[in-house]
Image (cartoon, rainbow, N blue to C red):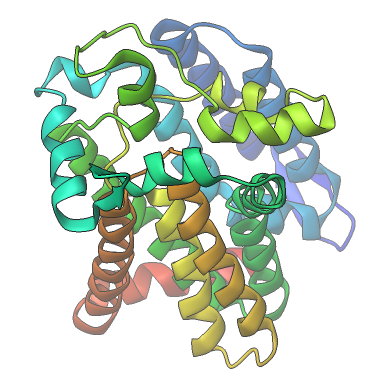
Length: 312
């Protein structure tokens, strides 16, 4: 038994049952680990619709399954908070930031985050909010562009994205770290049940009378995962592949967004300068590691060939 899709490709009963089984397994594991959420049903529905709609949408969702798997892993981190495995660094990281990047303010050394809380401006509240909103749409939009124009580069970009995130997750669990806003609201005492906080981004929400960032940070996987700043890693990966693919003026936009997100991370008190630098280093290591794997491993290249054939 098979179902014909637009474009001539068919979906067999085996394929259909496989999708149903994987979806049911995802829903069951998610409910067990992080609890049932309507978001999970929405993700399954999107996958079903795109998988069975047309040949083109099927290839698209299979390609973007790389990002879906990443998102599921990120979501499941809520079930295994990093503070259960290592000490959370609060005062040590704060003092290290002051040591390397401290600013003299009226005779007192303060962190760059504290400086911008004192000297913030409405224009910067709005500008940094806009930059911080780019950290998801820009990488995903760029990935979509590569998918439709350069399938192999799409795979390279997507898998580099995953490698960088996995490196970041290793550091999250090895070196749990509180963000700057935590010190502002809680001092140096560790409170394990601390909820996510919009910090400086609350000023963006307040200006427009919305709860955009509040709703985003209410779903955060772990408060104590500030080091490295993967927000700072993502645009750098985009810029690297933009330059690699010689995208001309688009790279000026990518570069602006990259620097803007780096500044916004500090300005809004979501990350220390050290976190941003660690994010930059993580991106560089992830890019280098992936390039090394492709260059040295026939197995990786063979897998990429097969995956490209599926989504091509």
